Length: 174
Image (cartoon, rainbow, N blue to C red):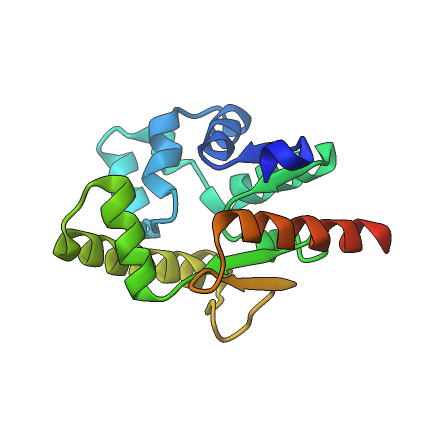
């Protein structure tokens, strides 16, 4: 999709931008990425010498980084609640059944069925906890997506074509 549109893709690169903007190390940003650390843990880390982490406010720096990328335009931002930060952007969710996700994880990450299943379920729990903690949102309870593609019925190439049509329609009304 990024190549087809000629747009930049922001996934882990978003973490680099956050670290640079917040003047903290990549390690600090990665510690918060789609995980939540309580204020008590931040206080304790600060007491034990991790001053850099103690002063880092993930939601504020995430929002600033996402909004800065959006101002540049022509960008694809993967995850991290960007749909809550940029509600007027074209927000797309790509999902699939557990069986499809597990099969993909097994194929692309060389995992057993049990490993893939455990990884996906843990990731889903962490993502949900992240959305609740950082945005106060339940993903399913308040969907803020313009388009949801259920990948049980589409190939990756199909999804790219669907999204290209959605981008054309979305950009045409602005």
